[in-house]
Length: 185
Length: 288
Image (cartoon, rainbow over all chains, first blue to last red; front, top):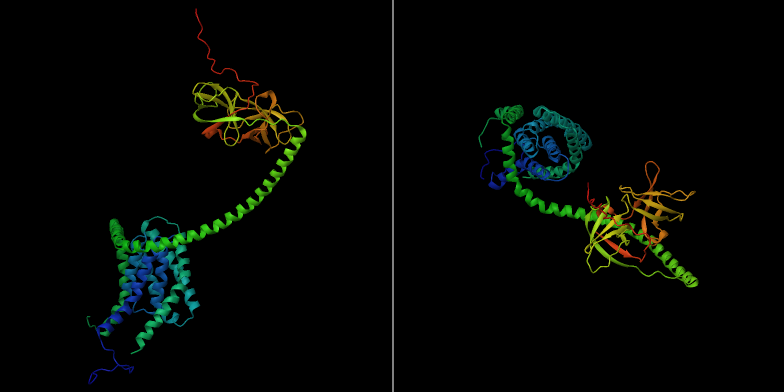
């Protein structure tokens, strides 16, 4: 280019808006939602674990909301919640609201949480997962107008709390890699 | 992509969460209003996902098989240890039996003991339960070529079953030890006391007529006695069990409720033979 018409204030050269570049950006944008959905579908495969779908969805949504809110936007969360409700036998809308509530709380606290140590984030997530499970159970009770046993929801919360470090470990690597890819011109 | 001004985009971003939450409530309402909608969506999703699960099933079943294999191996190990231990114990018993056998042999040589002839036996299939005069009896299918006679002793693979009471040309009836009419002379193995095993139509015959000063002990083995010349001595019958009221009963080794085939032994004993059982009362003649 002979004369660049526009320079970014950071001093980085503007990336050429080529097709590959756009696909790359789109892939980075879509990765959190798609990977979470795939994980949920895998968790819904018939294995002998108590409510693993919710347990797989909670850590992913929380992690991506805190560290990459642009990719885990409310519509994406909504879609994931709908998938959660369809994969499980919960009444339609319960999973959606739980994931959205988790998303909202994590979004509100993300500036605070991003600066904390991993352990603190984990503890906060444990509390959020317990709250989410209770909300999930309460919504199920409300929508079905009957009292389901609370044990499966609690199992789900415990499983989510236990899965979080594992998922966060992998997702942190991926997040770092994405950030490096974004920062290099 | 539609170009939007930055403030508008920010406003949209801020609005999207409340919007989505409202949409979640809308979905809830929709799910409540149309109960079949969720089912339809679920079945569509399941249809779409079934190839994924089908592809996943292979490695998952492999993993499961591997896990089961490992568990089976652990189980095998435990079983192996138990079997080894049992084998050791049996080996000890085997050597004890060999020693006893040789000792027995030696003692017999010294005593000029008259050995008993090995008894001849035929195996007959049980074809019917009950019937006839007795409450606890079985019918055996025999052939005319078998020389079955009354008083032969019937044993199954575990122990004493009963005695032959009726013989036809193609069948024989065995009175089981549990029948009310059965009286079997037995020996309590540890005290060597004689007693009578009396059937009561229940699963366990009672013991009676044991000598004074001896009490049948729970768990004591009971074998037949040669008294009265009806049975050979030492056929395994059962073990003594005390009933709820403290009365000694015999738990038979033989499984009388599921007899398939019994062996009929001819010991050549002609002690007490059971009376003719099929003694139907003759219709009275010349009834006035």
